[in-house]
Image (cartoon, rainbow over all chains, first blue to last red; front, side, top):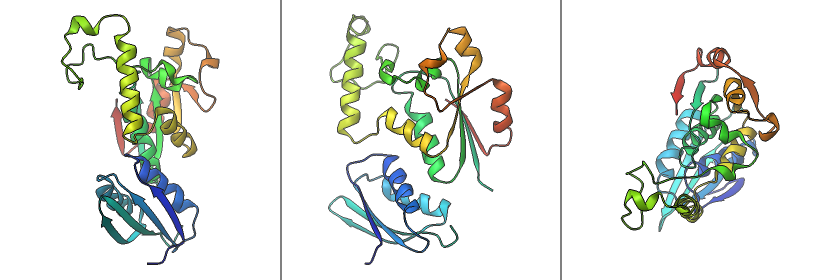
Length: 78
Length: 155
């Protein structure tokens, strides 16, 4: 899966993965994709909620041995 | 138009410092416009030196302790410092942000921090004790923003 920027939010707890994600998205262009990894199990629901409320799109989510990987495509109109 | 969150932070212990800063920084990440009004003990959270933030098991029966500890032991000198040290260690071990880190995130995200002028006068606080990124105001200042907010919380 292609992405334009990668962030590591492993071993960070709420709300840091979301804050890092927000910062990462501010550093890429519209329609570009941010790949972010986290280990906080709560981040699964939180990233869904984040995308639902901000309009960014989660294009893919993987889980591998307690590591969650999210691909988030930045909303077109920002 | 952006949603708005208005918070009142009234407590000044290490544990209670978390809710306002977690909620404010997250709401800002969700594109909310956020304002926090710091009053009474909450003003401690705006000091340059956050080293005063402590946690006490006294009067908090729900606080998890490594071993059962009667109240009369908890009141011994040094127990509060010990509990605070243990809490800070746990916070670091679990990847939970420090209060300083969350406060910086709020400032970076343009969360408006308002210090209650009345409390500053009441406790003879000096304006130089506080970080620069704050404003001073009163109850009417709070309502100017809170009155048109979507979420209002007293913490």
